[in-house]
Amino acid sequence: MFEHREQLSGWGNCPRETCRTASPGTWSAQHAAVMDSPSVIARGMGRSYGDPALNSEGLVLNQTAMRRMLSFDDRTGILECEAGVSFAEIIEVLLPRGWFLPTSPGTKFVSVGGAIAADVHGKNHHRVGSIGNFIHEIQLLLASGDVLICSPQSNSDVFQATVGGMGLTGIIQTAKLQLTRVPSAYCKVTYQRTKNLDHTLEQFIDTDGGYEYSVAWVDCLSGGKSLGRSVLMLGNGAVPEELNTSQRAQPYALPVQRSKTVPGWFPASLMNRASIRAFNEVFYRAPRPSQAIVDFDKYFYPLDGLNHWNRMYGAQGFVQYQAWFPETTSRQGLIELLAQIVASGRGSFLAVLKSCGAASPGMLSFLDRGHTLALDFKNTGPDLLTLSQELDRIVLQHGGRLYLAKDAMMNAETFAAMYPRLPEFRQVQAAVDPEGKFISSQARRLQIICERRPETAAQTTQPHSQLVQ
Ligand SMILES: Cc1cc2nc3c(=O)[nH]c(=O)nc-3n(C[C@H](O)[C@H](O)[C@H](O)COP(=O)(O)OP(=O)(O)OC[C@H]3O[C@@H](n4cnc5c(N)ncnc54)[C@H](O)[C@@H]3O)c2cc1C
Image 1: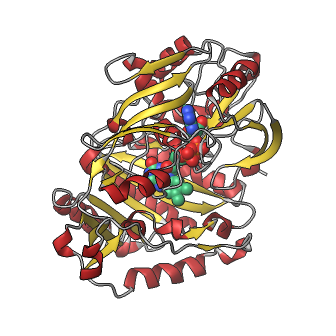
Image 2: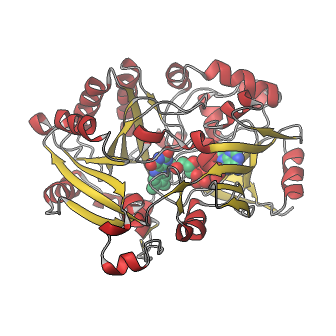
């Protein structure tokens, strides 16, 4: 199979690594690539931010050429597909038939394999949890070359290690995914402005029962009495009676494409405290109706309308810091985290707070009951690393954790302290992959798998050099 070397990164463009890559188009080619290489990691659409889909010391096996939809049952809503199928493709084919994803991240440009490996969540975690709750079955290519079928009922330990397991148990070849019926391709969205964090958290409590979807944009530059002031965007699927005449004529019409493209790297200097403060002020105060009917693209995927928006942070890239706090500590944890960010003077256009429901079965899955906050930070090297270590300390102190799909800066000790089911995961992972064939740059940095090969044993817990230069 054709292999080449290329510079790869995650969505944050940081770190960048030169990796050996291959893109098999058949299961036999995929099998051969896995058997021929001592070290492999799968890659979907590269929408994780840091280094989970990089492998500078081995092969990165791109899954996007393997993207056939194999079957769909219109009565049950179960889709069987190859792991390279994207959420965008599922929407394109099945939304016109009245079906949508049971939960979806803030971009539809993710693969089914990448979504399962990160156990992604959406704006409805408080209601339905993460995608792992909707996977009936996975077909997994193991390091031995065997193919294992796992599900919540059969080989359930491997299933639980694979959902949220960041590709470290094997290659997900196919999945059976439960879709959800929706009343239309539109959401009825209610907007609420809050004056501070307490007000935001109260609004979550008051509205979680009444809305399927909820998310708050947070002004992370605002301190003092306005710390945590937000705009909540609460949504429910819109029924045909709520649509206008033209929408009602075609309630499942695919949203009109409205993409624009960021043409090249923006000068990183444009992302500064003043520009972010100005944006936040305008966004917070913008006149908006208290309710509106908006199409799914606008509500679920506002960022997808701007291709390559990640270039806006400049060629040095950026990091997304996403933390979760348990219910009992989230208020205090969020106050301390936001106060530290305000004090650092680093802003983020994108600071998103969500309310979270029960954990999914994944051993390394991210969310449980509580709240999660995600922010983007421009990569500025050592001082960003210092800030992130201060933030990590706050998260740890409050029993929280960081999201592997976004992480680029954690160290191994912090990771182990945040993920209580890590020993269980390592046991299953060692049983299915005793030589540690499936490994990513992130897994080396965080020592996610037990050290068995000399290559991994030599690793330290240092953060990536592109963040410390
Ligand atoms: C704009 C934006 C918004 C986002 N919003 C959210 C959000 O709201 N909620 C959320 O949960 N996430 C969110 N994410 C993160 C994203 O959903 C995850 O990182 C997801 O894993 C990306 O899928 P991918 O196909 O691009 O996977 P990649 O980034 O290519 O890979 C991610 C991981 O999956 C593994 N993997 C990929 N394919 C396979 C396979 N076939 N078999 C085994 N392992 C595999 C890789 O090894 C890697 O560890 C967002 C990302 C972006 C860019």
